[in-house]
Image (cartoon, rainbow, N blue to C red):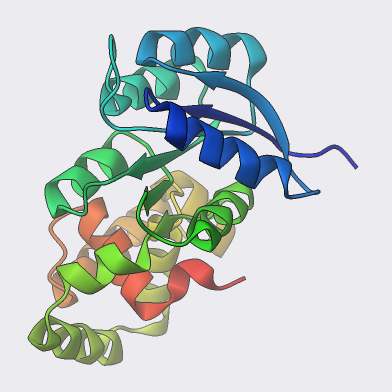
Length: 214
């Protein structure tokens, strides 16, 4: 069976070395290439088309957000993971909106990065548990829980698939309903959990444990 190929891009040699060791120590993964700038990463990803690209947010020549937006056009099949020191909500929002499927903090355990790689490979999304914990206060956790109880089964199904990155058309095919129905369930569900956009839905899904479900 062919091993998933991983590319890592970061302008810090220590980070590159650490991720290289992590990938090479996992018998199920293969290191495809390394890059030290956004421009170099773009060229390598287009040429090699790895399964997963792990990107630092701030790199010379092209930052991770700009790189992700470009890759969404040029190599949409490549799954992107942000590896960063920033736990701020604004950075997570930008990463998700740019098309990244994973968000991992550099200070987290190496198991988080492996979990993120495995998660995005099967089509899921992964948000570092530390980031999720920081984003939700105790009151928001209670509000989220009550919102989940108010969701209908169909609204829950739709929001789960939205959080996993599916389009409304793909969700309609998966659930065998019309696109208009998906729009309705998505809007109703989002309103119940006070989600203003897809990034809020992803954070909510991560809190509920939906992203780790099979």
